[in-house]
Length: 341
Image (tube, rainbow, N blue to C red):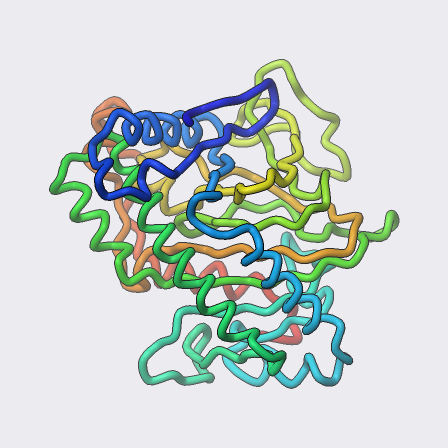
């Protein structure tokens, strides 16, 4: 258990001590929280060992179901197109998602937290569209519930690592208890060598926590790590600097029993900049499937730096409060091709 690493390898953190209510405030939990804090300060990314939380066969079944859907004829997949709902919920064709102005070489299904009084004329406020593949919805809803609970567990562990007192944790918890989560099921065909873009272009996540079940394909997910004196060549126009610091792109290859986790922009605000949302990209040369779950703040949350974080960063509040709903909508509207606007 704890924080283990080799040069240019993301740390592996076992969340098991936080799964046992009897271990509350134990040295094991303290070690996990310390590891999370160090990982968020240095990388913004880490592996989370969840082998004691989910059976390995469960996400494998999810990818089988995803494969069954993505292998359907295009006309069948288009029956749940995002264009039939709110331009966010449902299926996106290959290259329909856009990052940095370029089409991403993947297709996907987007599922968001259900809302009251859905209205498909409003972005994000429609109804989810589920494939008719047998057991698809049942199995994925079970996964969503497990990831939603895991998100709360990780939030508490991170709050402890940041040194929040009981009242501060209570306030933070109130901002995520009704998480406006969303989940993607992503299908990647092999990326052509001459493709003008990426499987998913370089970007930072804009929410709270990303919990990614990655497929076995190696050298697909790449993360920018701050390391002075270790610069790459800015391949394909990608920067070898982030936030003014030199670094290198490293592979975040899958580890059995683990998911890959990273923080989004809202944790950058909560931490007053101690934690950074980290640049990452996907260059997928295989043909496989990934399932990221995004644990986000409540839709109406007002996110602002936490007192404990301000105290640790010189006593000066660097980040202004952010209304998450406005922030999310401003990001979403630039993330799809013009045909779906």
